Image (cartoon, rainbow, N blue to C red; front, side, top):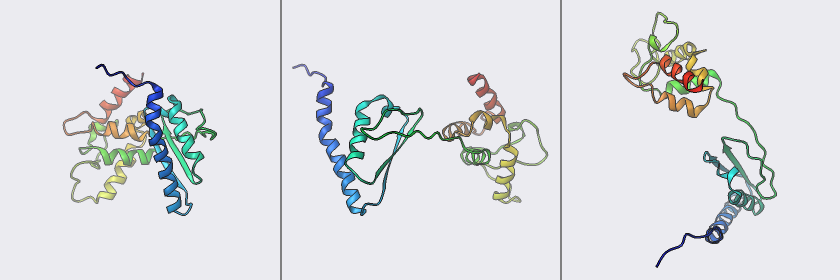
Length: 192
C-alpha cells in the first residue's frame, strides 16, 4: 500500500500528547521547586518561533498553565507575535566589548600570534593564544599585553563583538593558516 504524508491536522494530533507531557513536566518542576521561578532558554537560530504559529502556541500554552515559567528566546531577528496571550518583549543584545572579544578570540585560536597578525609590527612578543607561551613571561601578563595589542585591530572591528563570529573566525587561526590581517581583509571583501 502507498503511505500518505500526514496532514498538518494529523501532525498536531500526534503532538498533542507531547504538548500535554511538556506542560505537565513544567508543572511538576514548579511543584518540586516550591514555586521558584523556572527559566526555559530557547536558542532559536532557525527562526522557528517567528515563523511557526504552532511553536508560539506551544510556548503560550506552557506559560498559561504554569505560574513561574519564564521563557528566554534567543533569536537572530525580533519576534513580534505573542505567545498565546503573553506579549513578547524584544531586548536587543549588543556585541562583546573589545577587551572581552579579544579575550574570547585568544582563547579560541590554535597558534601563537606574531607580527604578521598585526597592522603595525612592534618589538616584542604577542604570543598569547593557542600555543606554548614563552617560559619567561607569565601567561596572565602575556594575555593582558596581547589583549591591549589587539585593541583597534581591523579583524575585531569586522567581528563586531559577536561571540559566534569570533569563535568561527578564531578557529581559522591555525598553524600555517592565514594571518589575522589576511582574515580581516577577507571579511572586508565579503562584507563590502
